[in-house]
Image (cartoon, rainbow, N blue to C red; front, side, top):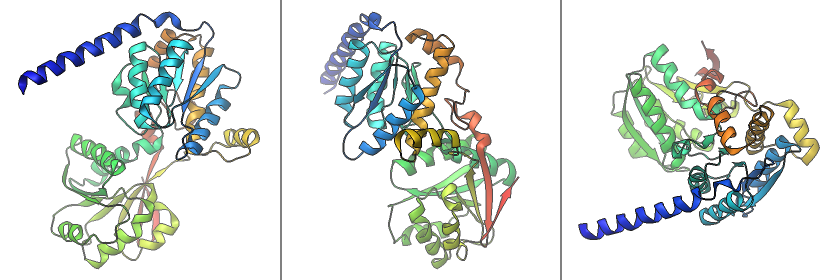
Length: 362
């Protein structure tokens, strides 16, 4: 068995080496006039979001040359389209793809070919780890749990925390980032429980939560799940007067607060300071496309504006664009959107809900 594994490893490494050789010998195919590749899916499930992303990018690019490539929400087709854009069309940069499942393989091709890629919407937080040519746009949504962790550790001194999160990639990713930040600051995430989104029966989880000794319970739940979770906390008498619920922005929606105010004595939550309020962009987008922009459109527009700013500074080739992006990670094309997370912490506000009364915590 070990012999077969070694043979497989040799074949794999040889294949990667051949791919790298074929890519590096074709680097000089870049066009002299800057060209932006926009990778989006026309596939039925994601077509509307893909169109919004594309429209936002085109609005941001204005008159700069661009070409649209259909990934079909399929990793293999995304790779084929990225290769065609890089090696046949000689694009200067790539914006997209929409989804993490297609952004990851495209990022690998872009990195090997030395083509800067800006990902506006992929949720995979580790995407930039693929290489130095890969950049991801962040908004305050991406740092909510980090800002919350820093606040409760520095101001409230909650050192023992449990987590109740949805049993999917969203819940698991947020839990990991929250847990890492808490432990970095000296706290302990003692227990992690996952629930099936939409589930109305959390009896076993509630009984387990009732039996543990923690200062707070972090619940990054979907908006639709919060009322049911809150009522079960009350039904199973999980909380005492000293235990707080920690949540993200969904916990602050007025209709949601009304749903849980009689069940939960103390909730601490995040709010995004003015993120998504861009009247000039919204007017321009609505005038051009006769529709209201989604978050995908906002992020696509922001990625395009970064490319525009780079071109104005003379970064009109793959190499110079890479250099410019590496030095400009803190730049914000729209307020609260950046290539770096750290500068976005200040956009997060912390609130407390006590018996239905909402107040900001300083």
